[in-house]
Each structure stands twice: as C-alpha cells, then as structure tokens.
Image (tube, rainbow, N blue to C red):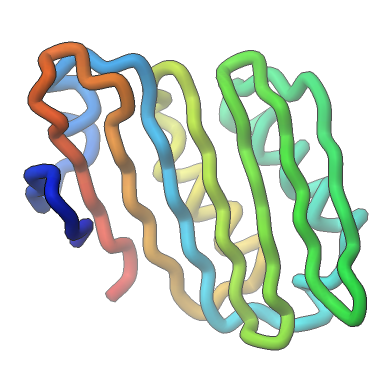
Length: 148
C-alpha cells in the first residue's frame, strides 16, 4: 500500500478503479524481483522488451534512449506519444524498476505487465497504479500488490 499525506485505499478490482473517477493519466510502477543478472545486464534485449511491450500495449514509441552502466546495470527510457516508459536494472540485486506513465488507461496493461515480468524471468513482482491529474480533486490512488 502507498503511504504518505495523501489519502490512499486498496482496490481489489483495478479496472473499476481506473474508470470510477476522471484523471489525466495512469502511472504504473512495476517492481520485478529475482531476475537473472545476465538478463538485467543485456542492453539490446532490454530495449527489445520495451519495444515489444509498447507494441503489445498499443503505445506509440517515439524514441528510445539507453545507457549501459559499468560494471553493470541498464537504464532505458522510451518517449511515448502517450507519455513515457522507463526501465532501470540492478543486476547485482536481481531487481528491475519500471515506470509507465500514460495519458489514459489501457485495459490490456495488467496482462502486458505480467508478460513483461515473465520476459525478465522475475520470481515475483509488485505493481502499483496511481491516478495522475485527478480532475475530481480527490487524489485517489489505486494500489495493487501483484504477487505477495
């Protein structure tokens, strides 16, 4: 569950959460744990996963930029016509941090995020979805801890 000054609530039905209040976009925060260090240090493969995710999610990838860190780790950022998508890896911890911000919801995202997690070989993952630009002014945040 998210913590902080703004009110939060757990939502077991993500789809209803995304449609119950108007907002300008959704921010998907995906954490992957237990991934192979070799997978997380493979820059070309990570960029290909991002391209595949964008295509499978009906997102328009305008530009992809990336960096290979030494001795290990990758950061890749995709500029989307819908907003942005980033992947940061810590091979030494088997961990990946993924952020996807889009101007609107896509009902296919839960399945696409699951496939992305599988493509990284994650042992488990957690996903949090935050409504951004809540036009009702209620700052409703939606949270879904995926496999805990």
